[in-house]
Amino acid sequence: MELSGKTVIVTGGFGALGMVVAEAVAASGAKVALVDRADAPGTLGANMTAFAGRDLTDPADAARTIDEIAERLGALYGLVNIAGGFRWETLKDGDVATWDLMFRINLKTAVCASKAALLHLLKAKSGRIVNIGAGAAAKAGLGMGAYAASKAGVAKLTEALSEEVKGEGINVNAILPSIIDTPANRKDMPKADFSKWVTPEAIADVIVFLLSEKSQAITGASIPVPGQM
Image 1 (cartoon, rainbow, N blue to C red):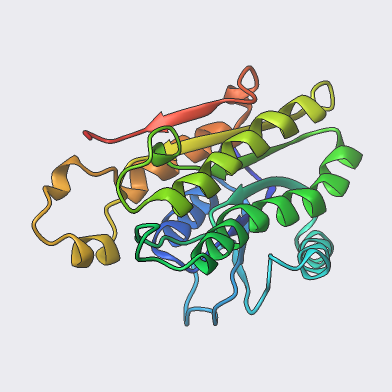
Image 2: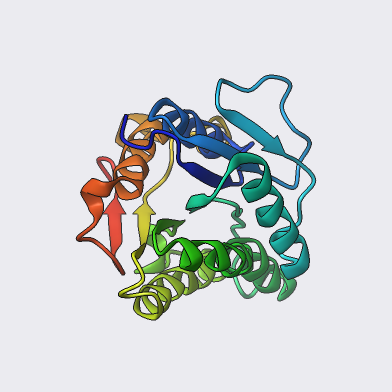
C-alpha cells in the first residue's frame, strides 16, 4: 500500500471531511492520528487513533500534541491540515470578530500544526504537508470576505513554506475544494444541486495522492478540486 507504515496526522479529524480523509489514509496503510478540539467519536477504524480536546491555535498545545503522536505512533511523515470552519456574513451587517475567528481556525491552526510538524519532518528529511484551502480564496463571493481571506492566507502559507523546505525532502501543497457535499452544507443549502458539489471521498483521493511518493514532483501548488462546479 502507498502509505504503508507511515504516520500521518489529520487535523479536524472528527469532522465530516476529516473522518473520510482519515479512513482513506488508513486504508492506504498509514497509522493515522486524528486531532480535534472536539470529543472523540465512539468508534474508529483500524490504524486510527484519536487525540481529542487539542487546541491547535495554541502553539504550545500543537507542539505537545505532535510530539505525543510521534512518540506513540512513530516518526511523523504527513500532516493534513483540515481543521477550520465557515461563516457567512456581509461586512455591513457582520461582526469584525468574525475575521479574527476565521483567521484563527482556518489559518492559525495550519500555521501552528505545520510549525510543530516541521521539527519532525526536517529531522527525517522526508514528508508531506497538505493544506485545505478553498476555491473562494481566488474569488470571494457575497458574504465570504472573512472566510476567503483566511483561505487565501492558507494558499500563501503553502507557497512560502514549500520554498522554505525545498531540498529537504518535504513537499507542501494545498487543495482548493468548491462546496463540499456534507450533511451540514446540504442542510444550509437544501435547494442546491448536490450532484455538482465535490464529495469528501473525491477530496480524500487527491490527498492520498499528494501524500504518496507519486506526487514527489509537486510542491507549492494550490490545486483546484471543484467537482462539477
